[in-house]
Structure formats: C-alpha cells, structure tokens
Amino acid sequence: MSEIAIRFHLPLSEFSLEVNLAFPVQGVTAIFGSSGSGKTTLLRCIAGLEQPPAGYCRMDGELWQESAQGVFIPTHQRSLGYVFQEASLFAHLTVAENLRFGWRRTPVHERKIEIDQVIGLLGIEPLLRRSPARLSGGERQRVAIARALLTTPRLLLMDEPLSALDSASKAEILPFLERLHDELTIPILYVSHASDEVLRLADHLLLMEAGRVTTHGPMVELATRLDLQLAQSESASALVNAIVEGHDDHYHLTYLRFSGGRLTVSRENLEKGHPVRVALHAKDISLTLDPPERTSILNSFAVTVLAFQSEPPARTLIRLDCHGTILLARITWKSAEALGITVGKKLYAQVKAVALMDSR
Image (cartoon, rainbow, N blue to C red; front, side):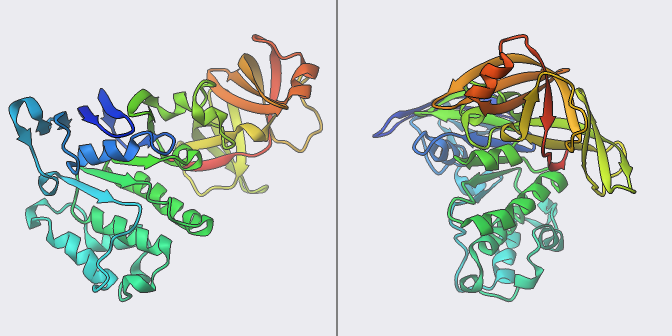
C-alpha cells in the first residue's frame, strides 16, 4: 500500500495551514471539510503549486519536498494528475486532441494506460470530435479526468470536481468516478465539502478545520462517529462491507452477507463471493422493540444502542451495534422516548432501503 507523508506550515490571511501526518494512499482518500478549511490549499501544497516556507512531502518513497535540505520538485516533474473545479480544457482543440496532449506528456516507456481504455472507462467516445464549447459540464469534467489519467500519474488529485455542476450533471458523472475506483489502481486524493460525494466514493478520510487535519482514518469507521460532521449531515449513513451470498432469480433479488446477517437487495449481476460496499442511510432505518412480523421490509436485524444524541428541535441520532457492524438511525425525539432509548438497549432495526455503492 502506498503512503504519503506530509508536513506543511503555510501562513495565510485567514489561518495557517499546519499539517503533519502520514496516511495510506489507496483507492480514494477524501479531504473533507467546510468551505475555507484549507482543503484546496493542502492539495496545492502536495501538487507543488504552493511552496510553503517549511514543507515536507514524500510520496511512497519519492521525495517531492524537503525545505530543510532545499529540495523542491516542481509540479510538472511530480508524477501526478490534477483535476480542477473547472475542466480547463484547451478550447481550440477537440476532445481527441485534448486527450493526445496528456498522452504526449508521458514518455513511451512510462505509459501504463491506453487511450482506448480511458475513453471506454469514462464513456467519452461519442465526444471525441467535439470542441469543449459543445460539451456539458459533466462531459467536460470526464474529458478533464481522462486527460489527467493519460499522463499515467502515480497520484490523481481532484479538487471539488463536481462543485460547479448541477444536480443532473453530478448524478451523471458519479458512476464514472466509481468506475475509476473499481478498475484502476491509481490512488486518488479527492477534495470535497459534499458529504454525499464523500460517503459514496471514499475509502479513507481526512477531516479538516481551520487549516488542520482534525482526524483521519478508514471511511467505514469515521462515517458513524456521532461527534463528526458526516454523521450529523442529512445524508448520514453507515457503510457496510459485504459479500455476495447468492441470488433469487424468481424474485429478482440478490443476497449479501455481512457480520450482522444477510441483506436483501434488488438483483445485481455480481458473482457469488464478490465483495461489495453498501450504504444504509440513517433516515431509512426504523427501530422497534419486538421482532417485526408480517412486514414488507425484508431487512431486519437485532441491534444494541451504543450512543445517541439529540438533534434539536425534534430528532435523535442513534449509533447501533449490529453484531460488529455499526449502523445509524435517525428518528424523532418522540419515538426515542417511546422506545425508551438508553445505552445498551436491545432493539430491532428495520432497513427500508439499501444503496449498493460499488464493488470493493
């Protein structure tokens, strides 16, 4: 597993960026926080677009910066791709010509990604003869990602690539970002302040506030911590790693096995034993004191209350243990009182919907 070690001190007008940590870089690592928390500045420091007076950056054994020794590798010599909020394509070139620009930057002996592979991965074949002016926002970002990938980077940096898109364009591009995760081994640092994006894409999480990384760790673990912003958001979810157990072709269903039992989802074209990750949204989990009977809800599990907190004026967020898997439920304060919610309380969780995120 690749690792990146960073140490930056960069005084800014609003705050100072103060970061000193090492973390694994595999799959998608999200840098998450509110606007103005220093996410983009951190990414620019890693890319070499900012040069802190005191800085250190080592990517998987390759030293990119060490201020004390006078080492600073410029951005164009770092093996990375950078995707900005705006696509920044060359307006005078077609899509195909934009792609070849990225391709030509890489020496032949270092090319590990084929043009046709990237075109298929990001679904841009119908766009190749168009100019950037004739592309939608989502299409432009897909082309920008493709161009960055064709430099065969060791690390792909993405700075809020969906923030300038409308909801329809965002929904269009997210599945392609998931395909990058599933089909390529290039690690990604993904900056975002949108919790739904982070929950859907990230394996590892760095939380930032006022120029500092306040905590970091596996996404599955941090998503359900009640003291963190992700659990407090409207899209709060538990991320569950599961294995495809089998299929029911008669009812068009797929069964997934996890530590808490068996999840039933709509039929998916996945082989038995295939690892998957699913999201169980807090708003889609109801609680009951007794084992549910004669209900249309197919997924029900015995759970124990680990912690809970009030969300004024009317809701309660509850952290639950389901045989080693952590779940979240968001219910009304009135319902919490009726159920007698206390730490250690035994309940049954009914999962009204299961969102299959991707294969892992």
